[in-house]
Length: 443
Image 1 (cartoon, one colour):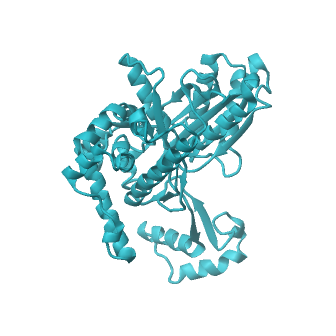
Image 2 (cartoon, rainbow, N blue to C red):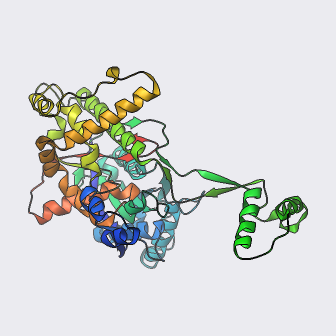
């Protein structure tokens, strides 16, 4: 018998500080209508001075432990998905564990988490999905008799360079997911579609700055401040560095200084294409595995996306799902009467063979495909699909902003909370979950 494992409980921590998008638009001279009605943005959460990845994650874990009256010693693992690590070597999960030990030491002892396995998992925004995938396997492997308890943590501070095109999609938050046998919220079967491709759509490289650049920049600042500098002073300083007692200073100990920034290098349009393509191929892989496992028969069953009462995806901004999901919507309906109706309305989809060979042809095809995706999104069929299956997932993201690894789980909570408040009975319903992380991978 296949073990029943999944999400038993979920908690979230959102900073109390926020930046209203209306105020942001006024401050930046941006188009509020585009940000609000075009992208679905209302506000972005901002960590307070005492908040970071570890504190947000720890608060959420404590909420799960307290609410479920779990003894710390029974928690077998705490796996963190983040791309906002506090250290280049020591896992941020250990900082979370440290705070939890301080909280529970009086009742459960100083070493109450001594036998708990903790680790960080990083793959851009899909790191927490990877952590959940791993933890689900671990819980299932223990069998119902062991009743293993795992907690998946997601915590991030989504930051972009000031004035960049990603600045208005910032946000922050953390959360914790309780993984056990016979879960109360979601059973997650062991069928995962995966798509991975090595691309540079969004990344945080180590930048290199030369000694010469550092010296020249400082002298330029001194000149701007009104200092009269000697001619060739830069050359003189460069010759003196290796003889000076300052040669061991971090700035000058090597010919180049390696700098890590929390803000990314990214190409928004390219990343959207990577997102859409990755999700499509992960869906194709999932469909194939579901057929092989006997869980889906395309000749007898409804198409998969119509079986899912809610579709939960990674949301770097609230309206990302309805912008990126047309590819899956199209693929799942090909050769069906509904797709014939759509094609009669918007025309046939672009085919690569109809464009010139080479890079220029690739670019033309990608532009045409982007345009076709937008045309799909404006059809009545797709609008109804979004309203029924996606709209509720957007609500929390609109008010909180991007959470990187936590965005997909915030979308899940948004849908569950909305359905609960609207007395919508979701018992026995199927939900489609699809995470994405730049670099790039979808599951």
